Image (cartoon, rainbow, N blue to C red; front, side, top):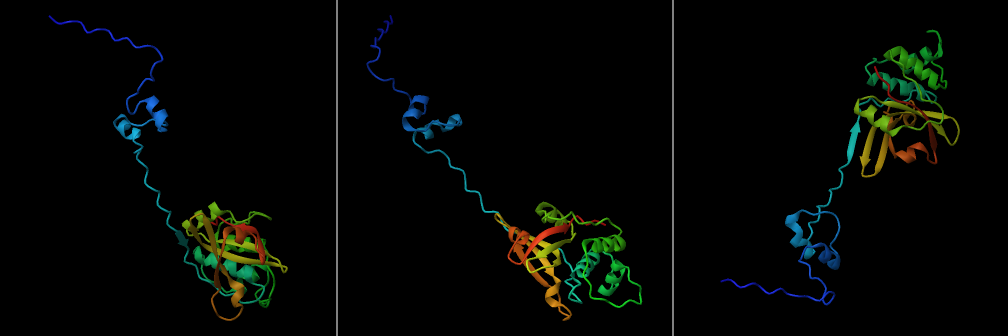
Length: 230
């Protein structure tokens, strides 16, 4: 005959309750309590062997460019006509002389000479609309290049035009055609036509960080023609 097991009496408060490894109290004692962990890993928690996530690899640089023609600026005041020429050519609007663009935009007759005159955003808008049949327009004064729109434009093979107000006086037009993302840094690449005025050489390819493109010791970007669609 089986005998009864005597009841064990324990005085309250004589000894702390001993928790099994992996229990809540044990985790408090060992400093391993926190977010929920799968049950099959409780024994590892008690020994401080939590699985650590693998480090996230650094993001690779991203560079995208439009294949544009880097035209020289035929005369010292024709940066605006050159910028229009680059965009019209890139968007499939054909090729013409810069003198033709100047005469068209200014309303000069064919007999008028190729005058070295300054241009405006309105002149460029007229040329874009006439030769591409689209409503290209500048956003408005004091509007800096919009990075997200710029990336979208380049990805869609659409160059943009920026107007830079020069610290030394006057304005200058450049064609933006390429971007680069390197970690947290953003870069704008643009075709600067006035570096090769009348030399027969191609425009220079320059770049700046986005913040430096917006404002630097040489110029301040204050208007842009973006999202030029055909």
